[in-house]
Amino acid sequence: MERVPILKIGDILLVSIQIDMSDQTAVALQEDLAERIVATGSHGVIIDITALDIVDSFVGRMLSTIASISKVLDAETVVVGMRPAVAITLVELGLSLHGIRTALNVERGMELIAASRADDDRGFDDDPEDVESGTAATSP
Amino acid sequence: MERVPILKIGDILLVSIQIDMSDQTAVALQEDLAERIVATGSHGVIIDITALDIVDSFVGRMLSTIASISKVLDAETVVVGMRPAVAITLVELGLSLHGIRTALNVERGMELIAASRADDDRGFDDDPEDVESGTAATSP
Image (cartoon, helix red, strand yellow):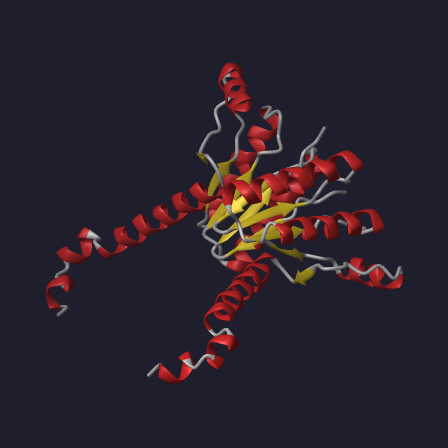
């Protein structure tokens, strides 16, 4: 069985889907990704679909499942490299990539994940409940 | 005809080979890469072969050709993700990946390219001919 390779780049895992996904390869990819996220502590997953001519409901569901699994493991999923024709077909078929963020290319996807992480971090620092308990006032 | 996607990450182009390369796809990849190197001004090409079970003389030659083309266009090629079994077979078959640098994974490949670029830059600054002309002695 073919496996889709998962590349680690900094804080991010990169998957480039080029082969036709079968049930088996899709499940294997989900398992591999979940294991790699835990093993590496990555906070982002970028899935490149430049090579895909068609994104049908099966692939769409696989992408959604990957995004959901990643989210549980505290990693954000961004799908990049979607061809214009694929986007048009998705809309025409009424398929929505539920819970999936998209970006034009890998670099924009990385920026999106970095920005999202930065927002999260700021969220922690400025947590209003901290201020309420008075800890903010005691710090120098 | 299938095309192998080329991903741009910062200063580097990343190619993940997952499909069986035919003559046509190999030539298309070489052309696409050459065009992308020129268009983006990238200084490094990383070719990931994690997904390949076999590197035969055809693939070996393709990698060497890509490395040669990239070199002419001032980009360095690093092959990453070679499986242990592939390395053993390469040596047993007496195939040498001529002119190709290898690294364990994408991140190490990026480091290799960055280090190599830094060396090149330093090479310009510390040009021994400068020293001969006495400029080095006048610096503080």
